[in-house]
Length: 378
Image (cartoon, rainbow, N blue to C red; front, top):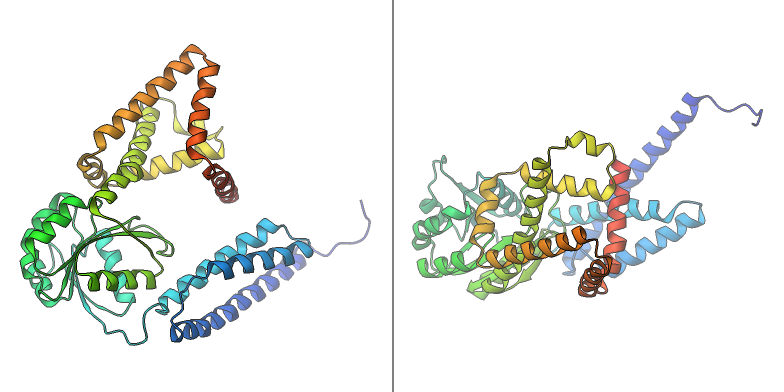
């Protein structure tokens, strides 16, 4: 060991504090430049996100870090967080809204619920006037609909059709009636029957608890009135959301996989763990990152309201087919494991590997990234 006298611990920590403070000040200076950049982008009608620029920036910063002896993963992770904050800030400055945008009046029926509040916040941030109507508000749903340009139905699935029947006739013919439920065929048909206004079905593919709307997806199912559909799409994209258009039938078929299958397998996992009788704390002593991710997903799922998930799964027309296929696959795999049939096991692996194809490479890379970030936070 070197006999050279080292600086005191307190002095070294003081140096780190000073450097960290400089780093924060540099981030603040960077964000000030982003503010100017936002003004230029809005004047020139540019998008917030430029994927090519982002890839180039990450590669440049990673190479610079590597030349200075820093791990590429460290530098890339840092700048991904910085870029995300930059996009969030640009969206708050309404970069993607045209310079001459007339504010509209948006009524949120069910605006005191979780998703209702999130939708209200979104439109308020974009500069629109928002009216909130709910069970305990002085303003009624029909009153709000009469006064609004856009009426958003943000109530639970089981109440959606009834509320549409009550509110639909009061939406002005020049206005828009839209919903945000997880199923689209029935609500869209109900809206078309109960109003002469424009109609749009939407499904935000996220819950009210997300930290940021950046990159979150919303599915749009047009019913009547392309001008309003374009207006909603423009506003959602200006808030940093990604939009996907689909028919109501396409949406519900996709949700059979994205929601029904996903929720069902999570529920089976949670129910199995609860019934096996093994203490959760005991397994956590031996957890792998993959097992921990599964536990986080399951525990988060069951911490939420079953009144949200039940209608989503029970109301999808393909639920029986999805759950029957799941059960048959589970039974087949169980038989293979009990029989110790390695050849059959490898055949199943080959079948599924062929299904995923090239996506497996992306999954391996992104999955590894998620696991590393999870380990960092443990």
